[in-house]
Image (cartoon, rainbow, N blue to C red):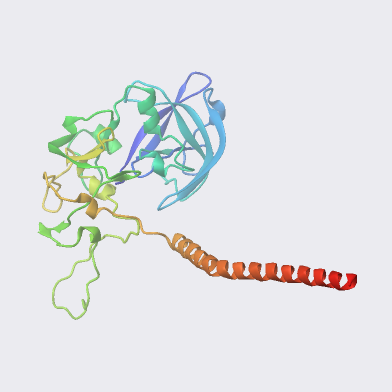
Length: 350
């Protein structure tokens, strides 16, 4: 699952003034990173030298995304969130010094706040993500919820909400942001927010595929068919299904990390018409949800390494008897040579 929403953070400076930065909220990554050098697409950036509370960890970090990448230097600083919990957190921050196709012209955000788990943090899982630090250092419950209101789902609410494109609730649930009931599904694994898709329906019709193979197959002989065909805008993936912002814009989603579950409800900013609709129904009980789980296949490199180790073990098994035979031959040869020398000595004595 991957959400994106813009929020704000405050940087504490030496003059006791708090500098505000706009941050992109991302549930598909775990690093908190902000631009820390001039960039053509940034109106402002994080100035570490002006922060009286910044601590340099003297460690570099590199993070590639599906689109774009950045690298920078790790440190910690005090962070607070306007219009959120009245707390200040010392969090790990990556100061972005170089980037490629990461910042977007006119986007009005200067960094990214990854809200996923430590397992996918860079450079490794020992780096504590921001939300983990927030929960440990404060009394904020281990839960947050998001409402995305994109261009495809215009807001029915005020122009103020329309300017931010949604809402993020830290530590709780805002019942005014959704309609109907919340339905929950368990988090299968704590890295990304991984949930299991057990069935895919199109226009209410079950595709009746094995749940481990929930993807659309190519249609054969389309050119010779007289039937109408439709192409779905679903791109191929080798890392499982991603429920991204395009899908999630119609829903209010609760990330209940404490109970290891994700909740879905129809968003209050969703507009229902002839072409757009969002609905949440349940409960649906599956006997063995783990059977539908996606297991990451081994990469070519790891497969080759496994084959290499197996071949090395087989060669070692074949070489062991040969080595023993060589050692035995050398020992017999040495004994025979010693025996011949002893015989020569006896002959001389005679």
